[in-house]
Length: 514
Image 1 (cartoon, one colour):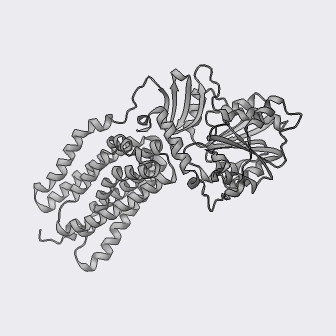
Image 2: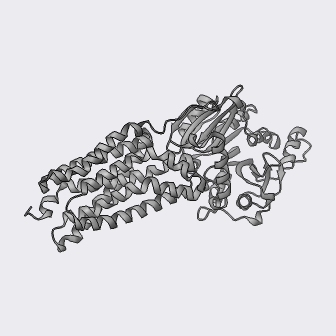
Image 3: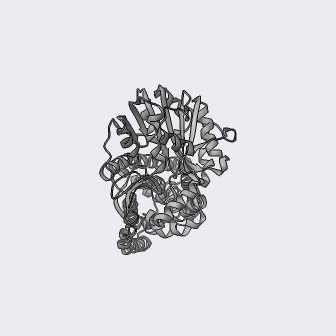
């Protein structure tokens, strides 16, 4: 032990350690939303909570790790082993933590659950950097270079971990399995570091803390591996489930109610009867009235395919429909469990990118992406609506479904949709899906020409259905939604919390915990 510590410890293994732990930080941060999203959604609030918790945890880790490093020459293996154990148990703790925080609501509940689940392991990983700096520094003159190199390598590890997870690992392996694998990998790294510590300190005792945590982890592993499995229920049966890049996609049957649901996390995007397969979402029935409003429709674009019922309804009128769906798991579920057969092109991708590739013109464009869950705010801005208008034929029509509260016509979110549409289209009509209910689907029809609901050429059945549901929305209470500033998510907080509670209560909280 007479040799300078930097001579013994400033080797490749130390940089490998900070590289791997840096990668682990980003894996935990990015995957955290996939454990939280089925329960709280993947809204801005969930992402904000996770980023804030990550920064808080790392700050604490840096501070505590620096103090520990100044007081002891050993302990790095214990820190990594503790991070491994705390990462390993995250999937095990997810269900009880989410259920316990549910009463706090969407924003506070997501923050508290994120804090409990992820901060312990992130704090331990944050401690690695200061400890590595201490071990790699032999003199005050070397502090700057040592600190810079350690944190540079750690950051490179974070970059590689992010790319490896997003581009390769997550599309192939579930989030729970990745958490468990990461925990085991950190425990294995801790064993290697413990052996190195034993060699330079010439004491077997330095291995004991890390070894103890490895043994505890091995004992807990069977329970962790078996946690999070879906429970059977007489009330509903899960026919299909797939964890995609965009959420947990499920097809759920409720036999007693003769209902089959297509859900993504805690949002329903399709519903049909089990016995006959007919569409059960009232708002989608407006598509059977649109051909009467605008005759001679030949082709359509459906953005937000869901179960595909609107495209199938348009088929009965001889309308060929291209469908655009971001999630391939949703497209698979629609084909295999809802009998969806495309009549036009099937496009899988994000709407903002894919719309730019389309040529048009379309006689009808249906924008059906605003479910009760998180808002894809980038799909309801002046800029995107302008792109859609450019794809429309001169006599074409844009149909937009929006979920919100009516609030006696005073809802600022509804007013904002109307005001934003008015920036792009000279004419619009608004219809409510289920008259008499405050929480509802609202269908906006935007055109370049006026639509006359009293037109004698319109069949009376269609005319009566539309006029019973027709609304007048005052846009003065709203704001224009743009790419630069969209306040939609803020305006829809109450809607998101109400819808989430409604769906979770319907299927049970445990169904949305993985």
